[in-house]
Length: 552
Image (tube, rainbow, N blue to C red; front, side, top):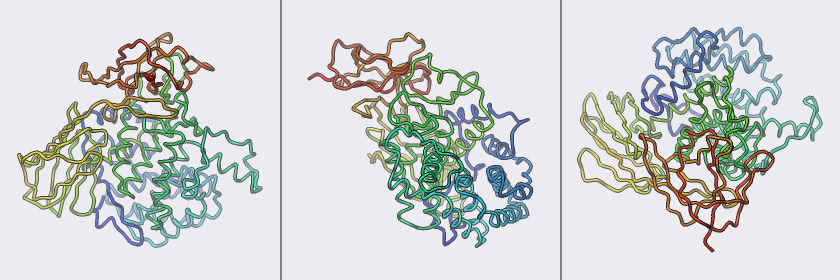
């Protein structure tokens, strides 16, 4: 990607963060494991152009695949809009990576064709492709300055539902059951129900969230910008799970911990969070992305396929515990999600600030104030981060690190200076003349903590990891309530964390309609047992949302 200054083009609002070029960031360790798991699913003989481009970027290969025939895709419009959008996204990524002016001009010509056809595309066809389409339009405008692209953004914004209004007056206050309305019904009431049916799926609500951020950069509107935060709050309040995700199967499903979250929702949400982070710069968005990545996304992969639905509380014999072969759409969604996550590890803020937003082992190469800079990051099992800086020659710039809110305390040491306590749940910025040999150490003290959820239920987390009671067999005991006075303690086994916590049996908590129901309330602490909770990402059958047992 261009330098921050060259990426800013009026009248679009300047992004807060801009991702580094994909080839400028190399990831290692835990995040690389997830990348490898996604790449292992892709069949090189069957991938479509967009899949091939995404896999090339994730695999850090130097040669890009052939560009798709974007002009033929444009000729099929207004039909096959989804195919056109995927081809356009691949074509733009290839043109940018190869700095190919002719390929960029081909993308512009194809966009002119879409501009001519746009009026004939209804909102029910446009909305499923709108987020990717607006991403492409904004990328092309920032690079070329073609004025007609601004008109296209306005037209797309006017032809899709009012996504900002959806989040400011959030209509999905409980598990959503769509009204049975014919797909061709055109009276006002039927069109409203059709629109709610479309927006009520997890994937579409995540795309709508992304559009609030993308439209905010176009419009400069406080209403659009505010819808992003309001939307996250509403999704958490009415459908949130301790994995960082919301329930959707495929429709928004409320706060029952036995409700599922499907794979398209997880992947679309990670892409949306990338858009929100770029547009608004809220570091809490990065923390949510880390929690989703380490729990909902990490739990997708199985030895013989993927788990297409995530359920926080489920017995081992439930259908969602069965691994399935991924579809082509599943693989593409995972590739797009991983690209979004990896781009958020290192980003630039302005011309002279480099920011580490996700705590993964990595190396980034960039220029700060025109000087080549290399920063290597290493993490340890406590979550602490060690940064090593190399520069071609001494250069003044700012280096920012996200200090997670889940840490109890944090202190930072810069090149042997006296350690300094820093605020948790904030970005910490170091501005100085950096040179080769500079080292920064962010030491975190992290303890397991309790998160209160729906109807007084509780979950246990350690850092960004949701902890769960594993249920490896269908008859494994799971009816436990956590002691409300318990102090969870972390234990390590084979470099994996576990959490020990006191609990008692909750015999009134029983299976209902073949599923584990919401935890009961008002339980009294009885004889204590010590439970050992393991990372959610390593479980299949499990309980991760518990009732609380009181002493009074």
